[in-house]
Length: 166
Length: 141
Image 1: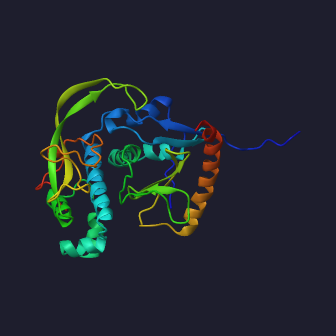
Image 2: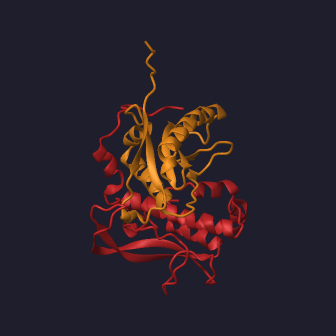
């Protein structure tokens, strides 16, 4: 075990405020999307009582291959994401929503928002039914219990099926 | 003349979560001891890519109800604290006084898990910070 302690002084108060204040960059947004994806998948697995071994069987993969899949960075391929979602009887869809530029706001203060441009979400959606285990938002705007969490990102530019390797 | 006690003052700093991450359901703090913060200093020493990964996990923990991830263990077996694992980095936190997440320690390790002795050491620090947080914020609930 190593402690990572080059300079153990407290950053200035401004730096504390800056920790989250900047609009997330593409990399952070991509991480956000992948967390949303796995949150959706893990939640669905729990609700449907599907273990990783069950998922491995459904995907015709080994248990260790599934474990590796669950530790992927945003460089996971769309194809692999679709395969995981399908093993849980879910469709993976990409949707877009506008970015709101929010100035100097936190959860304790009212937001001042301004519209900038469109962007993408990746949300898993139940393949067949509309029951409460569905995730995400489908094309007919059914709101389903999945945290959209403002996890918008430049998904199309940061992850593409041919650019990323699983 | 009474001997001076060499105890460093422990405080907790709130990390404001901007609304563009979503509505916060948990407050996020980091521990500061004697004007030093292991957590924030370690964070600052990470690469930009790793910082993005850590920020992403913490923002999800703050805004997503029941957030589940292979990179988050909300509570370790036999201990009262949890860890986030943007490997090889590990940040340790505990939940206290309702919806408060307090990050208090950091370790770097490339293998999957630590020996139990390490977790016990961290547990000692956890108990100290937890007690202090309870003192400072417990009555404000």
